[in-house]
Image (cartoon, rainbow, N blue to C red; front, side, top):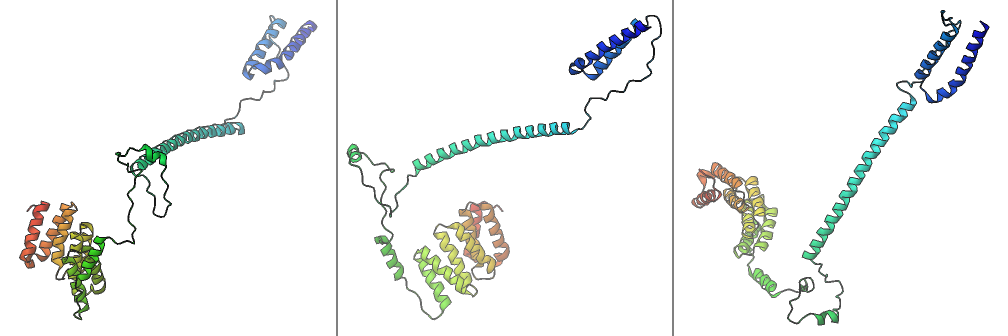
Length: 311
């Protein structure tokens, strides 16, 4: 019996000395299984034919070394993984933005070069004139045509009046300004005379002043209708459309309201809006059909044909 106890003690001491080494390399489950196997082997040697002796002291359960489902370490690892993912996303976006910025800079450089080639900078009147270099002047053949980039045509100073401008001023000054004592009528008559003489910009200025000052009176419908026609004859159909529509809208019972709708249809045809012109002609017919003069009815019918309004 004493020999058996010595054998158990020796084997136990050997086992205990091997535990630190095994603990450094093996998991807990593996180490526990190996200890159980070794204890059984010892029991088989000590009690080869008998029943093993149950120990009086039960083994203290070994605490599990597995990490719980959520610990500060696992949370920290998850946060680090999230930061790494976000950093990778930001890095990719930065590279994309850098690439797009380079593309924009390259496109702008090409655009600027193209614009410089098409529209070379012209020296202003106040800038000092550069003295031409003799070497360049001598190198240019006498028969060569100067390029637009190197030979800009000098513009006359604005203060110097051209002969054509003087002649126009004299012609406008020759238009008689009426003075009958009826201010509204005289203002409109002078605008009409300017329009009839084909001085359209001057007529527009005079007729606008007439509408602003006397537009609420009986002369307002005639003045604004003629203002629309002055714009139309001056090649400004958009401004004409605005003036003519406002005349109909503000003065539907004025003596030129129906005529304004007729000329509004013409302006819309010139603006390449035939569908809108057809609507204007329909309004003209519905509102003033019974009272339209022969000339206005003919104007409306021709406009409907040009706009392809149908029946």
